[in-house]
Image (cartoon, rainbow, N blue to C red; front, side):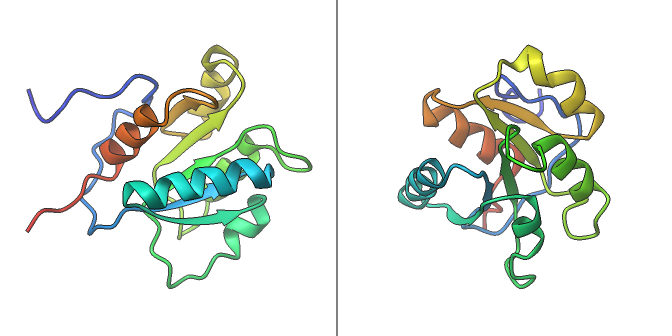
Length: 145
């Protein structure tokens, strides 16, 4: 067996390349208090975190900020996460960056459309962050010296 087993909710079958730590996570969510709490948890865990309050803001993040993973809300005002993911996959910057849907919707409600726009996995809002950390580390494994 090659490497650890895939965490629950990971849809992608592709291989993910190793990244130089710390893992840099972009949170795209229009719920500011939740984004701030998630960002603080990521930083406490040892990740770098950046917040975008919608899809357009995600594309305005500084190009110098090398992103390893996108945590993407699905239910956002104006432009839902599926449209954001589709735009990301069509861009040079985000084409291969792992995207994890982070939503209060059930996995069965998003899996078909999520896979169609190449979202790599699903994590339910409100579930233990330990599982989300595990998924992030799986899709952005740290390069060891």
